[in-house]
Length: 625
Image (cartoon, rainbow, N blue to C red; front, side, top):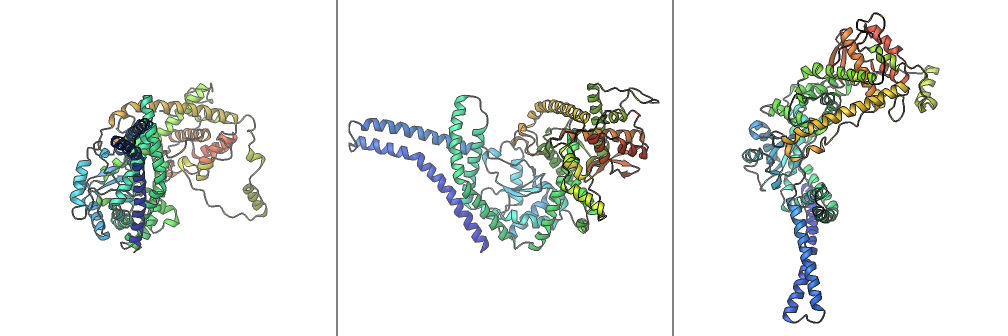
C-alpha cells in the first residue's frame, strides 16, 4: 500500500509537469488559432470590414513569429544534450556475477532491471537515464554495453525500451561485502519500477530537456544573432523550468518513497547494518583523497589503486579508533569487488577518473602524469614532494637575497641547508601582536584556571595529520592572523613570495596540459567526451592553501629532507594522514608544533632540540630536485 501511495504521488506530480508542457504548447498555438479564425472568417465574409484586413495581417504576423519561436524552443529542448555523470562503464563480460546479482535483486523486487552498470569514484549510487540520442555517439562502447545489458539484465523483465543505468560508487565494491552491497543497492534498483511508468518517464525527459536548454543558452556563443536567439529560447526554458520545479521535486520524492517502501522486503535488517558501512566508507574515501591522493596529484602522479587504498585506510582506522572495533572481522567475508573479473583494471580506470574530477588532471598518461603504485608512493611522491618544496623554498630565498653563508666546518658553504631557513625565520624583533594575544579566548582562560587550581585532566593526544601536524593545526594552523599570514614579518614576506611562485608554476602546468587534453576526447574507458575539460576539476577537494599553510609545508619539507640526508630517516605513507617521516621505523608525530613555533613566533629552540635529539645536522646541505 505504501508503494502504491508513493507511486501514485509521483504519477500525479508527473501529470502536473506534463500539464505545464501542454499549457506552453497551447499558448504557442493560440495566436495561430486566432489567425486561422480571422482568415477563415474573412474568406467566408463573416468577418469583414475596413479594419479587419489590418487586424488579420498583424495577427497572422504575430502567429508566424510565435510559431517560429516555439519551434526553435522545441528544437533546443529536444536536441540539447542532458547532463550526464562521468562514470566508468562496466560491461557484463567484465562483471557477470555483478550483473547476475543485480538481475536477481530486480527479480525479488519485481521491477525492471537496469540496462547497464557503471562505476563512479564517489560514495553514492543512483539510477541515471541515458536514453537521449546525444548520449550514444560520443561513447564508442555504449552499443556493446547496451547489448550486454540486454542479454544479461533485461531478458525477462524489460517493460520499457531502455531502462536506466545503475551507477555504483566504486569504494562500495571494495569495502563492502557482497551481502552489504546487495542491501545498499536494493532501494536504488527498486527505483526502476516507478521510472518505467510512461508519464514519469515523459516528465523526466521534459525537465531534463529544459535544464539542458538553459545550459546551452547560458554558454558563451560567437555571433550576436545566435546569442539573441539562444537568449530568447533560454528565457522561455527558464520560465518553464521554474514552473516545473516544485512538481518535479515532489515527483522524485514520490519515486524515492515508492522505491524505499518496496525495498523493505529485501534484506531490511542487513541494510541497517550496511548503512553504517556507507558512512564509514565515505569518511575513509574523503580522508584518502585529501590526505593521500591530493599530494600525489600535485606532483604529477595519480595513485592507480585508490579503491584498494580505501580498504587499507579503513582497516588502519579500525586499529586506531575504538569505535571501529569489530569492523575488521568483516574482512573475512567475500568482498564485493570479487564480483568483477578484473578488479585491478576497473580500479585503475576509476582512479584516473577521480584524478580528473577532483584535481583536473589530463586524460592520458605521460612523463608528467603517470600512475604510481602504493609500494612506490614513498619514493615517487613523498620524497619528490619534500625535495621539490625544499628546492622552491631555497629559490625564493635566493630571490629575496638571503645569504648562503654556512656555519664553520660545512663541507659545501654554498649548499642549501636547513640552518639557512631557520636563521632567516628566527625573529630578530618581537612578533607582531595578534588579536588572540591581546584578547585571549575563553578556552585559554579556562585552561589557565584549571592549571592554577590543579584540576587539569589528562588530554588525549591530538590526531596527527600530513607531515606530522595535528588535525587542529591542519585546520586552524596555530594562533596567527585571520587572513592566513604568519605573525612575524619575515615569515609573512616569505609566505607571500612562496604563494606567488607556486601560483606561477601551477599556471604554467595548466597551460601546458590544456593543449593535449583536447585531443583525448575519443579515448576509451571513462566517459571523457561527455564533459568539457575546461570545467575541470568539477569537484575541487580543498580551497587554495593560505600563505601560512604553504610556508609550513615548505619548512616541514626542508626539515624532512635534512632528516633523510643526515639522520637516516625515510619517507613513508600513512593511510590516514598521507606523507609521513619515519625515524627508526616509527612515524614522527611531534614535528608539526615545532615548525609552527618557528614560523609563528620566530623561535627555533623547539625545532633545534628536536633535530639534536634525532641527530639531524642542520648545517649540512641537502639534496634537492
